[in-house]
Image (cartoon, rainbow, N blue to C red; front, top):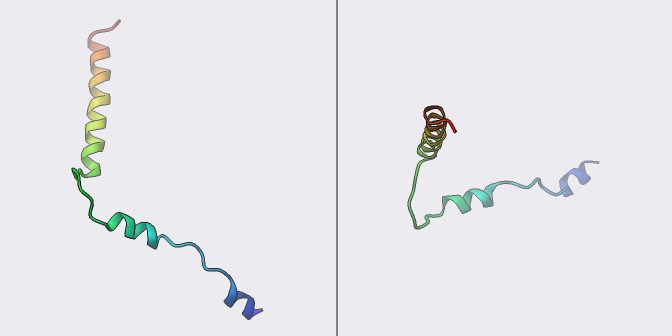
Length: 55
């Protein structure tokens, strides 16, 4: 039974995915926190405009 476990395929790892994201790429680098803050500000601004200028 132990020989079956030794020959069993290994689970897929994320090592390839990590190497892909560690590679240096060209372009603008923005922190995720900034994107979340800008998205929240856009949503908040649109709600504020709807409250101030109802249709």
